[in-house]
Length: 457
Image 1 (tube, rainbow, N blue to C red):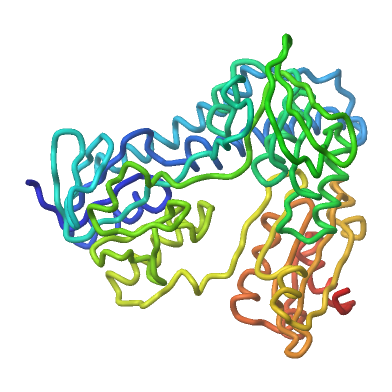
Image 2 (cartoon, rainbow, N blue to C red; image 1 turned 180 degrees about the horizontal axis):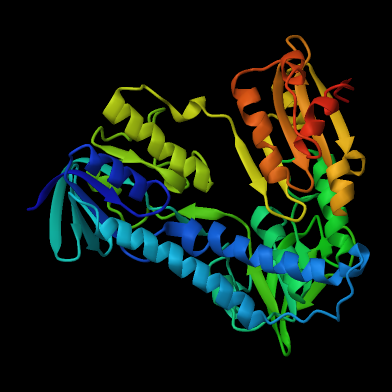
């Protein structure tokens, strides 16, 4: 049985970087990948979707060219070219990760499905290998819910959306959260009619109500239809497409379309790994249980990325790698629980989020203040002709420290980084306002937002 110092299962955002770091430290490393290198982000998530977001934005801006004094003809979307551009970008990223791993000194790549055979051994194909340390980075996949009629109609997920050959005439999106809203806006801008169906009373339920309302408003302005409070969903085959049966407080009892996209969550790829043979515990949803250092119930095994349920983002997966590597090689004693939540929703305009919002501050029982400024009062937004949204910052009343922010507007996915270090460092409003910023930018208005703080309602 071949034996290695370390074994990395999966090549998502955490796995390759960890393999390279450990190999660089002199360890022998085995890397196992059963499919495409790069994981969800590179193949089905961040990379392809943001490439499509860019194409959709170009189409949207072309239609608005006259507002900027630019005269062009009616733009035409070549959906095949949009997908080809996306595929080219994905292929370059995925092959880049593969070549990196194949050429990594001190490492060996195995291709196939990994399954534990014991606490320190794994079978891949016809070969069994062992390692002193094993790192599971197997990611997740789209959740396909058990809903009436789902077996009778073809459905799409974020993965199969990547293989579309033609533009859907009318896309029905089940799920009004991050994946559903991003795809919904992209397809609408590329030319599809879009209806988004959400079981809850509002979109992106984890966000503050004013954020949800603002997102719904600007998406509706682009022609996207919404069906909220949709209960008892069911799918039906129609002669000319599909339909979703609804039990809504308002509107028709059924929404008809040509395609259905399921955007209702994700599940970890932990089934079929034989985790029980390694003594690795999972929770009721299949996520691998880990401690603060990302170590599992088996002290020889760590779980990183989406499969541990401690973050559903590329950047949290990469941070998992940083924590594990720093702890193993430098004795750093870092924990995933020390990180501050930070993420973005890539609608246009995007939402940038860090730390606590109003809802979370209230739930935590923190007496807080909030500052808010519409993007119509941000010079850079006015100059760019993109004034949708607002900047909102939450502050602890007693200490004056910045708790978090919800920034919805042009460039908010980048602007939010101006507040990340402030939240980590528990920076106060007075300290934050003393730093000079560049004009004209969106970030320069963040100190101004803090000039007019009001108690939470």
